[in-house]
Image (tube, rainbow, N blue to C red; front, side, top):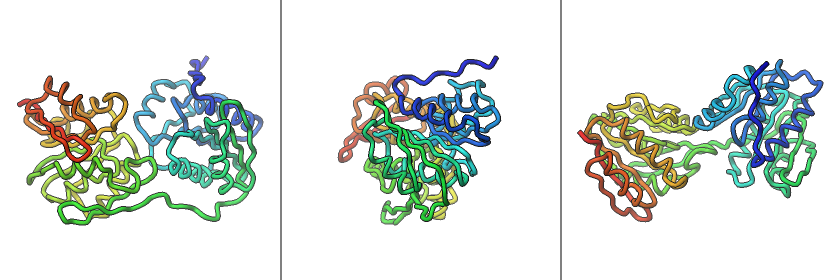
Length: 356
């Protein structure tokens, strides 16, 4: 008997409603491939895979950390389930796609993934899209632009839409963009996509981090949480003899960083998708830079700082930009030398050295 699959928690009604609709659609049909996204640990995708053992079910993640949580939760419960972390959906054709949209999520990312599902469905394939908003209108409008007919299932905790692909899309939107920024008088270009920090613009915190960081010839530099790669690009462009290694848990972020490096003809940037905190070349870097997210009660900031400590050589320096320096000033002296901080416009810059 296969192990019991983890159930969907009550806090994610849209995924549960989408699963019910998808199971009804799949019943009695020759389903070979299914594309899913998830709002949590891929429970709906795993249940579909268990219910349709002849089908290959792809659960698509952009973030490696979310993928790892799902892998831990699912284990080997559904052998025909693939948990894939990549910038784009796997090539089709799929007979069924199940997409989850959050009412508080990034609108452009939702449009991007909905279009991806519509493109990868075969003719006659079905999309199930659900949102955690019982009074939704926005998602319905987006689906009406992609499909000729959309059926609505209303619930008191979510709205589910079902659409059948009757023709290929007449217009395909490119959500990828390029933007420019300056560093020390040089005009540089960056690439971004929905779901990448920060899409379509240079983040103000990244601007302060770039301005506060100095590099010297031959340095090995690590950019933790590189996002669209603007910091890595700026530092690599200043000094061709340095090597910048960029790391992010988001697959699209790494793709964008490498695309930006190519756009600027920078051969001294490498990148990897990695959320573990243990990166290629750990213990050998001279400088680590980081622009951690400003939420989660500094839990992510702590992960970034710990990763920098593991990655730097003895005596190596870390430079961090934050909204406030309080947490860093209180905690970093326990493991770091020469901890310092100062204001930088609406941000704070924190520097420290790994003890020799």
